[in-house]
Figure (cartoon, rainbow, N blue to C red):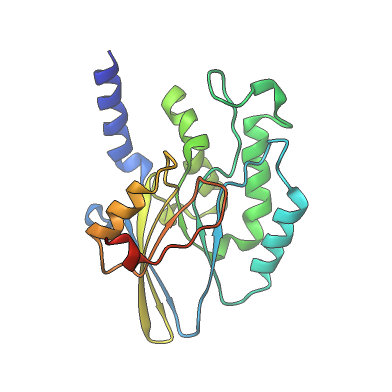
Length: 212
């Protein structure tokens, strides 16, 4: 029964097993403090394992982050392509297996793991959870020692930099529609920035415009 299945999925998503180990009242809120300015980097939609994955460009980006002592990293999922039976991607066209994709991403992100301030998954990781109950995001965070920065779905992030406070909302934005982000902007007008991934293109819309 699909209704029962969806109810079980919802219960699992709300389970502490799939959220960072922090007080329940604060499980989707994260903070980052710096006495200096902060350079915010977004890592999303890498799709390691896909034929379109540009390893050289990604490693150059990681090196840029590693060499920036003011860097703070927000990870928004789809780090692995993770084609499975029944998914849109072809299992047999991937360059490497999903397990190897996870191991590769952990290896590549290790030099910047201490700069990660938030981590959530995308639809390509979620498909494993939907089909097997296994959460690649948890495994990735376990390997990067950043489980305290992890939320399966989304996060509210408060950044204090040089005495100023900025509030962000971040999610992979599964479903591609901007409506979810607009809804969050309307519901949380105190957020200075609402960040989503998934659409594979850069697009900036001031939060003030999202309120109309």
